[in-house]
Image 1 (cartoon, rainbow, N blue to C red):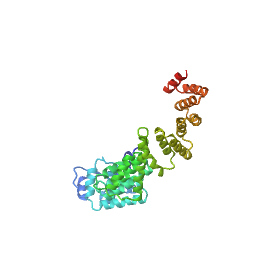
Image 2: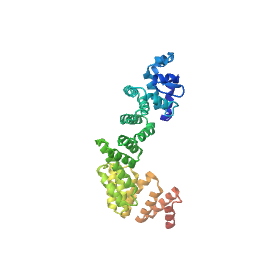
Image 3: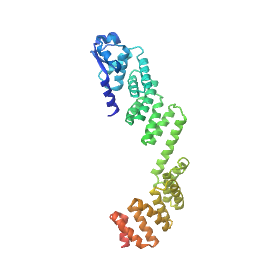
Image 4: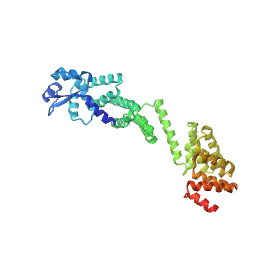
Length: 355
């Protein structure tokens, strides 16, 4: 069940009392066109309310809480417009609601506090209320990931307020978690541009996003623009020095540029961090083969092939065996490659060449 459906279900806990429009006029100083149902939220007084013959005996605070709660739980509820008008005509309705929200937070009833905050926005859309509801939505999302869309919806509403930075900070956090680092950086830059406080947390978030974006861009352009990729990737070693994969990507760039010795250096660095990355082992084989060191190339490629059973690595092995003069091993591995994928383009070419 999504969050909105869960909120709507909470209305089953509400007691609705039918009230004549004349009484609404007298008690709430509000003109309405028809009789209305007023909600009472407090579950601990439901029996007491049911026994009352006259709503005049029911504290007004019960109705304030009930109406705000309904506004927050179901934005399409039939009497929402009337509730908004009535609440705006009640002195201290906003103050009472804020105290009720604080009580729910104290009692760790965070979802009820959030629903009341959402309802309160209908009669008080101040920055103070938006601050509280955004932070509360983030708290709930950290406990329950289904709150993500709910929080994003509140964030979008908050962005309408001129010069208000907070929603951009929390959207940046969400976008980073989604892996949309460009959008996250855009949001944190907006947060700063709109006057958000540049705390250590904000600065670190911005810098980490820039690093990750450089990393992602370096990987993206690796094969088409290896020199530009290296300009992005090499500086990252200062911050990601224990990332074996980063050394691997740098090595690939150097191999494409035919700087095989440097490629081997960075591949060995990757292996010293994590010896289980089969791509690193395969790359070492390719680079040693490119240098004509077929003995080392075969050793690394055999290790990689034992793990992956990849036809691509197998064909690389065949070429190394042929170049080293070991035709028997080459034929043996050609038979293996044919079993793996007889239609592979390189396998077909090798078969034609070797007869």
